[in-house]
Image (cartoon, rainbow, N blue to C red; front, top):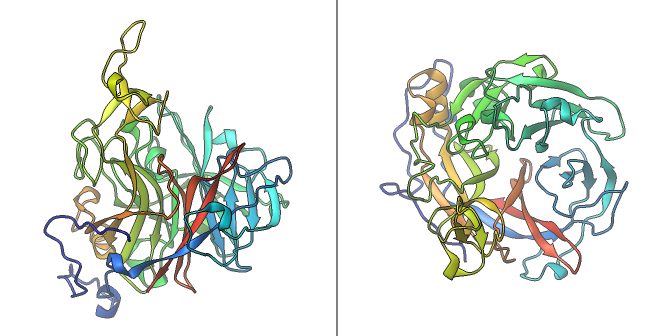
Amino acid sequence: MMALVWVQGLTSARSVDPLPAVNEGVTTAQTNQRRLVFEDLVYKGGFRLPPERSNDDGFFGGGQALAFNPSVPSLFVSSFAGRVAEVTIPASIVTGDPAELPVATFLQGFSDPTGGRLLEAGSWGVLLSSLLVQNGRLFGTASMYYDALNDQRVSHFSRSLRLSDPGFQGWSQVWETGKAGYVAASLATVPVDWQQRLGGAMVSGQCCVPIVSRTSWGPAAFAFDPALIGQATVPASPLLYYNSEHPTLGSWSGPGNERYSQTAEVGGMVLVAGTRTALVFGRIGVGTACYGSGTNDPAMHEKPVPPSGTFKYCYDPAGVDNQGVHAYPYRYQVWAYDLNDFAAVKAGSKRPWDVEPYGIWPLKFPISEPRAIIGGVSYDVARQTIYVTQRFADTDQYESRPVIHTFQIK
């Protein structure tokens, strides 16, 4: 059974909350749609990705980027190397044993979606961050994971759904110069009846990557016109973000909390059609925050690492030898936001950092994976199904592949 935790002072009732002023030309029905509660997110089961390799690549360590393709239907899924394959969607089942899950099959083998141009998005260490199918094209983002000098300028592209075709359009800078760390990851479609109020047909955001000064201190969302991707610059409307001057959800260096800490990570966002809810899937550490080298020996916690003693050990059996932030144990969770708050930011009556989640929902998958890392998130609007990648959950003697889990919106 999945637990439910609400932000203090908020309730799970479906009653209509007070609304911001309605923009001219927008009906009450559009602004007064229901707001989801945790019980509306129903777990339906999972399935595995193919264990075999294709085009000299496989799903070991993959699953960071995920996109639903409604025309088949199918899923585009990334490999650890940032290449992409298309797979079928088998029926999901509920089990704690990955070996019992049905297995998808390849529809298109692995291919570089950027046609060899991934490193044009940054000087080094560029990763494929997110994918989204919209208007018959595959959109994507790429990010420099450790951009200490904030060098990245461009982040977005689109291409043909046929991976063997050359149809790449990019790279584009979305929003402002020097702010790629706020936009260069999660992609989501904006429902038609919200596009005017939010300022675009697609949103993009990035959170919680090194270096913290270049990214959002919590979930982020910027609306833009995807038809402009391929141009050098694409304007965007900020709807949600936080930073060091406005740490609304909490401080990076402060005590951890369920809304934000230095161990927060975001996998993806879904704006649920027919509702006023945006769901952000990710993970967070719920233990004591610690910066240093991970160890599975609790007696070594906070002791200096020899020989220099510059760093200390942090008890984290899920991140042994990893140098960085720790707060073991970790959990999957969902940040739930009200789209009326996004619309208020676009209208100028709120600022992006004024927006707070109305709910924080811890998730538990049947398959245990102590690192608790969510990869990609995607959405089938026709079937009201959300797909979520649990990375490293399908482990055999040689490698760990992601499991794809499905949730139904009721």
